[in-house]
Length: 233
Length: 77
Image (cartoon, rainbow over all chains, first blue to last red; front, side, top):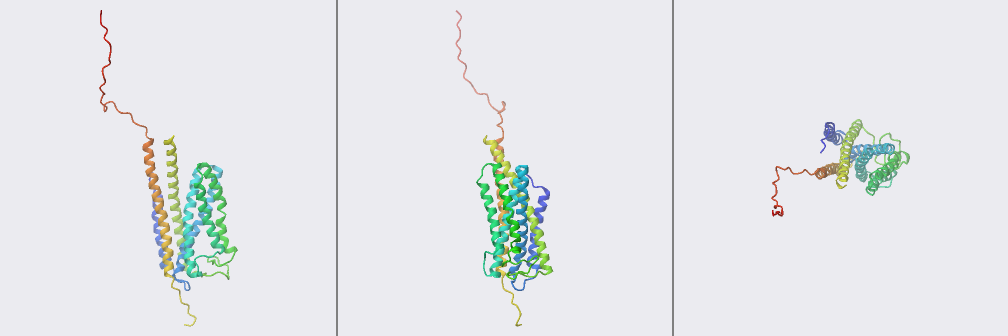
């Protein structure tokens, strides 16, 4: 059994502390939004998880390019780890958005361009794992996965720019462009901005921590697979 | 008072949102832990299977009694 590196242990503790600090800033330090009330507080976790997930998907695309050039399976394991953690974070983003939408838009879900592209992105990466499950040969699986992740990576910037290109009901809170159709938008006070930046830092550290732990799990899976082959031969 | 906005009571949605976020993260951390533990168990088992079998030491094993070889005595004529 591999022992955990000291730096990872420190990041583990730091991630837990930052999650607590971010929750405190979101629930206590940030003021209550005048119209929507306390449900607006889910915005901080919504932004934090969305930011890291979309960056994670782009990062996975970059890793797939490296794999396709190097053919080293190490990069495939890094890519799988990035996509898995991003998928979990993006699920939280979508769930929080839906919970916020119920009182703000009077519906759990609507086929607005941002929501549609977000749902497609999530499903694209769920399908990525289904594709990998269907291929036994590790080299072939890694090659197919890399090409898929590279193409799937396009969905991340499309999701990000959807509310800026196709102005619909989803508000643009950061760098607002004055969308008359948007509902549930708000102007951020300095305390709200602080809570948002704390959430962004916290979720970036949590992402790094989970990503590193997932890479270690991938390495262990690989080791067990190698040993299984050795024993059966 | 006429134009005063009343803040909506959306506390339940906020609680639901944070509960979902923490539960999903906790489930993922638990899945990482369980998968790592299972793989470590597999690794231990496979390591034991992979070890070459050690031959028995001669001091530990008792010599087996063997039947005397049957030889025909040659009678001297």
